[in-house]
Length: 401
Image: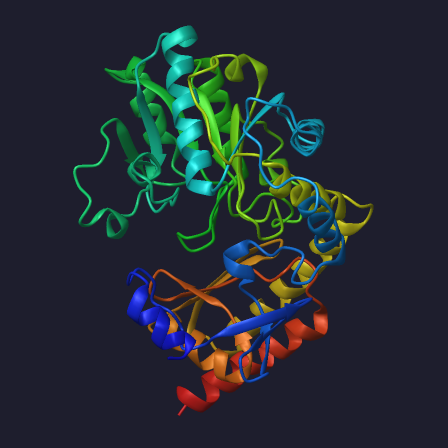
């Protein structure tokens, strides 16, 4: 049996896979089993921010592989300590907890917010989350997620989550200031809703949310699993808003493609945790943190994020032109840094994604009519031009008749 047949026979049916088997990558290019090249505008769902076969990450991982892959967190390891230092010194945070994924980082953030409430703020256990959000698929993260399609078949979810409209401060204020307002201990929000369709939070909304939560000793959690670590052109997405959260979750790109997650927090919040409150067997292991150190060093090199901002401006300008040229197909363009959405009036995003695979481009469909672009942060302007040309070809060939 070939790879596709083996997968279908032995792996649980949880993914709507494209009919494509990938075998290697280099830079922004992926190759299938027949040697065909694809320019990647998906990055493994915003994971491969430095593309593929990155020399710095590869060399660091190979060297560490020869020394130590895993040791329990009852002991100290240098790669973990160094990574924690880098994350804290380059962000608002004072402390880090390491885990293995975005969903786990959200679980850790929820637990930290609730134990902080029990020990310090003396508020209740409820958490305000946003409609159209996505925080992961474990039960706590799933309960925080504000999309019914992910809930179907898994109810009852965990109680204590109230979902309100994204970008609507009035609804958060009504909960916090209304009867039962003391029941709420935290607000969790994505500065950019990636899975929700690249919905970008307004600056005044985020600033007002920060003021409201600070005034009431409510923990503010930013979920930056998808948009942190350079994706928006800033090292962290919160830096676009001139505010700081109490807790931030990170994961996807942090270890260059190896599984890692992180919960970052200020001391006032982090101090709620004591030994035994939370743990992770594999969290922050020496191999993944070595990869993460190499990744972090690369994206914090002088000028790197400036180039991401320039490239982000370029792709937005090209997408805006595309909307002008195809108004009957394209409803909206949303973009910040190197995460963008093309929202169609009626065309199915997955159909467009399939056609683009034929053209040699990988993208992701989110929601029903939204095509998301999250290329590696090293994507070049000529590669963006080729994608735009192919989207034009797809629209003209299949729909513009």
